[in-house]
Image 1 (cartoon, rainbow, N blue to C red):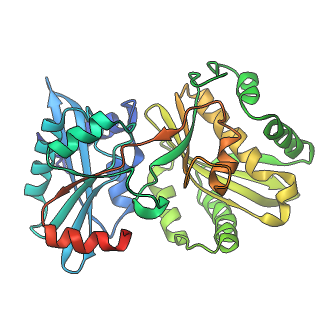
Image 2: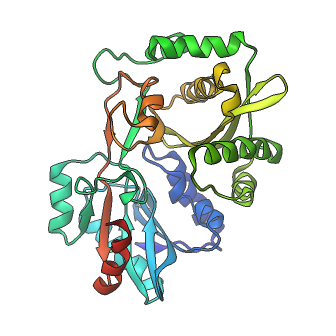
Length: 345
């Protein structure tokens, strides 16, 4: 067990290689994510076997209670999450390197929920936050996600090895809407330039206003573009219609997965189905890379009444629902923890 020395270029490269290539690798465990979250502290823990990294725990810290720090391992750790003894040792290693006012280390690995795993973490001293949390926003990351599995899972599904098979995986009306977008002259481009981000941001702000939700500033996405440009791990997709960008999406390629992370659209052009065209190109990107999963992101619940589910499910209606284990909280300061969780109750 060791703390990553950011001045050790060779070890940083090894850490990033593991995060990016391990089947369960996640962008939020990449040290670049710590650079993106410039107002957060950070510590990077790794475990080696025979000189090779086989587990990492990236913990970012922010003041979440007055004078006290939350330590958050977004979609981490990456490694054998059933080896709880090792995970606890990694947490202790992180705590030794972090300030003394950390009140909580929160994990939320992208691993399927099971009663067995949930019970094992509780017996090991963790507080688990999953099925008892009914509100989608009761967790930092949604626990319920819509995922398309290219390897063919669920009733009526078959492995997807071509664009034709990918198209027929969708609901019929979704196929028609993708074709309608093309017929109307919608063209989707992809890239990782500053101009791409600025075009994305215009539609992202429109979508936020239409849904009456807050949004991140342009500077956040420009920093993201600066950090990941040229890596091949990050792409901005833009749907163009008659000289305007009418829909957009941002995706990350880590491990066996494409993670569809941010999106935007101009509702004035809804009849041209720009968001469907964007998804088609992003899903083809995953297919071309030989990915196993395409993660559409979180939903409130797996029901048609949920607007997010309603849109995403049509692309992945053959696929089993992805319900993750949720948050695994290692409490350091109970008073701080109780104050913190009040906002989620």
